Image 1 (cartoon, rainbow, N blue to C red):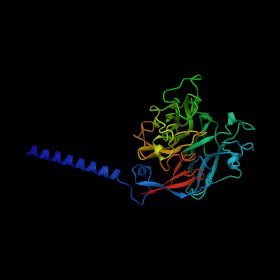
Image 2 (cartoon, one colour; image 1 turned 60 degrees about the vertical axis):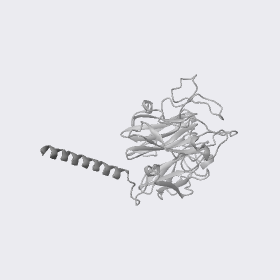
Image 3 (tube, rainbow, N blue to C red; image 1 turned 30 degrees about the vertical axis):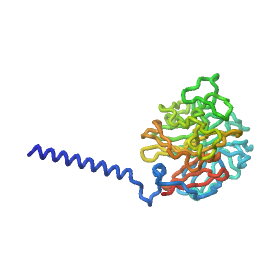
Image 4 (tube, one colour; image 1 turned 120 degrees about the vertical axis):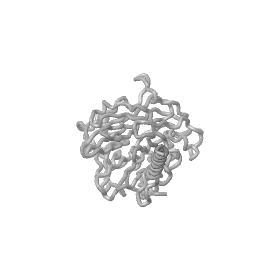
Amino acid sequence: MRRRRKHLLILVGAGLVVLAAVWLVLVIERPAERGEHPTLVDFWEGRARFVVEVTDTRLPMGESDTVVIADDELWTYVHASYRSAGTIDRCGAPVEFPGCVVIYRSSDGGYTFHHDEPPLCQFECERCPCDSEQDHVDQQQYPRVCRDGGAFVLVYEHKGRVMLRRSGEGLVWGPPEEVPFSGVWTVGIRDCPEGEEVGVHPFVVHQYDCLAGGPPGVFIENRRVYVFLAMGQNPGAMGCYYGAANAPAENLRKCRNNPIIVGSDDYGPLSERSSHANPYFDFRTISSADVHKIGNRYYMLYEGIRGPGPGDPGDSQFGLGLARSRTGRIDGPWEKFPGNPILVDLPGNIGLGHADLVVVNGQTLLYTSLDGVTRSRLALVWE
């Protein structure tokens, strides 16, 4: 009798464990209530989509990265020149194209933005006049910003290399620090590490052998900084560096799972430039990471470039990709969204892939260009 009772208790206990496990799965996996805002998790699972909320935010075409300063105050970091926006440097001189980092501000919760008159470069020059090599004043491209408590870290591209600067309040910035071994080069200068090779493109003349740079991304967590950058071309890939957030950039080391994302290994049909070429949208280059943590995973928006088609003078096919970490490690393995590219089919436009995602009062917003003319604000809504 005792043995039978013992067996019965074991069965009852096992049943309770199973019921508890099922309940946890249902609670964890069920969609959020419709009264709440969806996240990229819901987009990935097909429960949400992006819709245009503001057609023209008055942000310039191209790149931006937005930080929430207060409830209705947002700052967006972009690069702009005298030609594009009337930008001047810290010595008062017009800034050559493509330009330096400037701030556009919003006081209405991110619906519209404006710059100072005239827009002024964020970074001081060592001396006047400003110098391209020392101050990078004419090419502080594709800025990405991460706010960690009261500190700001900003990365940008300068002639293929990745630079990092720091600030206490997002306005006064320290000197540039170069991410080690970033840039483009030939094997005559130094060897090309595995994963950083530049392969053959059907419509691009081969100019360099190796790439570890381009439009970057940045993320800070647990006093560690992660810098994301393009690695290799044809096929393109994304890799990262990591290190102590308060240590010099020269101490950054490559993530153990580089590259974390790899593009299509094939250009696809040579004459095809429509949606039929979507599977090949990230063949040439993967870059411009915008990384966010949601739950226990990391999600990344990135630019994929297929490259030019026959007769095109330069890159002409762009897409916006989405990826997420397979585990809770940011430097572990990642997977790409099966519905890539998102938002727009190929050929896309040059401003599409440098997307800027920000969460304001729980709502997921995305700044990008869908038409190649204006920079819009998209909201993530329930399906």
